Structures are given as C-alpha cells and as structure tokens.
Length: 362
Ligand code: APR
Ligand code: ZN
Image (tube, rainbow, N blue to C red; front, side, top):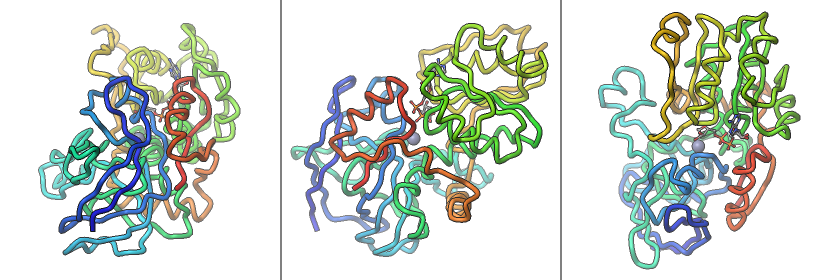
C-alpha cells in the first residue's frame, strides 16, 4: 500500500525546514508503519540543520516520537496494529561485540545520523530520514527493533519525550554519573535534556542541584524540575559554584549543551576528584583544552553519556511505569504543543533559549 503523507524536510544546510509531501511505498518484512501522534523538538534536530552535525540532505527531521502502529510487515513480533509505541533512534542489533557486552547503546551497527533505508521519496527521489526515523511526519516506517510498546494510558506526548530527552537525561544521572544521595550536582544547559537531568538528580537524592543556563528565563523551569539553586552562566561560573559548595566545587557537573566552552565550565565547576558527564552533542571542530597538569592533579573524571547509557528496551518500560506511578514527572518539560508547520518557529525559540520542549501533536 503506497501512501502519501506530510513531513518536515530540510533541503540543504542552514535552510529553513518546511512541510513537504512524501511518498512511502509498501513496507518490507520486519518493518512497521507507525502513525506518529507526538514528536518532541530536540536540539539534535537543530544540529542537523545548522551543520553542528553533518547530515545528508534532503532530510526529514525528527526522532523523539511516539505513535500508533498501523501496519506490521511479515515476521514482525514486537508490535501489532493498534499498539502504542515509542521510537528508539539507535536500535541495537543484539549481536555485535558491544551488544554482547551488555552495552547496546554503543551498538556498532547502528545506522548513524541518517539512513535511506525506508524507501521514502520526495519529488520522486529518495529522501534521508533523521536518525533512521524522520519523525516530524505523520508516518514513520522503521525496523521493528526501533519501536517498543508503551501503555496507552501514558499518553503520546509524554511517551515521545521518554524516547530521547528523558532517557538521555535520566540515564546520564543514574547510569553514567551514578549520582548518590547527599551529593552536589551542577547541571549546565536547561533544555529538555538538562531539565530531565535536574529532575533525575533530585530523585537520586542529590542534596544540591545547581542549575545553570545563559538564559535567565530558565529559572522558573529549573525550580519546577527540582533545582535547589539557579545561576546565570558567566565567566565567573566556577567561582559562583565554589561559593555554593563549601569552596570545593561540586561532586558532579553534567553538561547538556554540547560545546567545548561548557564542557570546560563543567570541568572547572567540579571539586578535586569530581565527575564530569558530557551529555551535549557538539561538533567535530570544537576542541576542548585542558592542561596535562590539571588533568592529573585535579583527579577528576570525564565521561560522556550516550543515549542514557541504557538498554532502551529495558529502560523505557521502567520510565513509563515511573511516570504512571507519579514518581517521574515529564509534564513540566512540555512548554508548547504545536503542529508540523510550527516546527521551524520551535527551532527559533530553541535557538533563543526559550521554553523547555515543543511537542508536535498530530
Ligand atoms: N551556558 C549555559 N547554557 C547554555 C549555553 C552556555 N554557554 N549555551 C546554551 N545554553 C542553554 C540554552 O539556553 C538552552 O536552555 O542550553 C540549553 C540547551 O537546550 P536545548 O537547545 O533545548 O537542547 P536539548 O534538546 O536539551 O539538548 C541539549 O543534548 O542530546 C544533546 O544534541 C543535544 O547537544 C544537545 C544537548
Ligand atoms: Zn534527541
């Protein structure tokens, strides 16, 4: 069954994305066709427009999404028509060295930032789909291991956020930083990812969660997420953090911007022996400078956290259960509910550091 549907497409680097009509041929064995019902606007989509991430064009944007399965190809067992599902933009193969090692988030066969595999065309020519999905669209075709079922009562908008920003933020705190009760945590960058980190750090029992952003307007959102303190980012940030942490610096700094300058700020915000966790995805050209002596004598550790360092298939059902039990709130992350045509304006708001998550609701 060939279908026509709409998606948000960027045709070249730096160009303003726009809604275009796409064509989708019959789905193949092992694939599912999903009617997208909600999709969050994540900074990685913006990075694929502005060149921070090199992406092929034309490209259907969007990867943080949930929807309803409307067709299942031959041999599909993980989902059936009518199921509510969340997308995994890095579906693991479950057979490579990393998957066998229990690190499926590092799967070596993952499709990377764009793939052509699902047969979608634009004006008669193949179009790339962001992170193998292209979810700012009314339909997505994906391999069945790129979806996981979630309870219908979760709601599509909340489910969508679990699939990228929330999993990334919560996983950085629990799996990578392993924040312990009583610790102090600095969180730099308060978008959907950073605000999820703030909430997760509080629920892990952190005594102090110092939220940092260049935009003063993020203060209210940070407090709603559970921050104990808010600081506007400046050249004197490390001094400001030391004042608030007994003169030492914080036990943890979690960077959720994706820039060398903020990674360095995170480094300097931690105490001797502190832990720096990089969650933001920056560009290949942006170099972080640290002195060899500083690396040695500060005894700090620096790690990145990719996609929450989590097994998606195990973690999403847990996060969904937490949301339904009321122990994890994601509602405060949704600042705007929008249509597909409003996605470019949502990127503008994101570039200005306004709001938390814009969510496309279809
Ligand atoms: N210092 C502090 N905060 C900053 C700075 C800075 N120098 N520059 C930008 N910010 C803030 C912005 O004001 C904004 O509040 O960082 C926040 C980033 O939020 P979003 O743009 O909404 O990004 P988000 O979707 O949360 O993703 C954050 O994680 O997964 C990665 O690719 C993603 O690198 C991105 C990061
Ligand atoms: Zn994302």
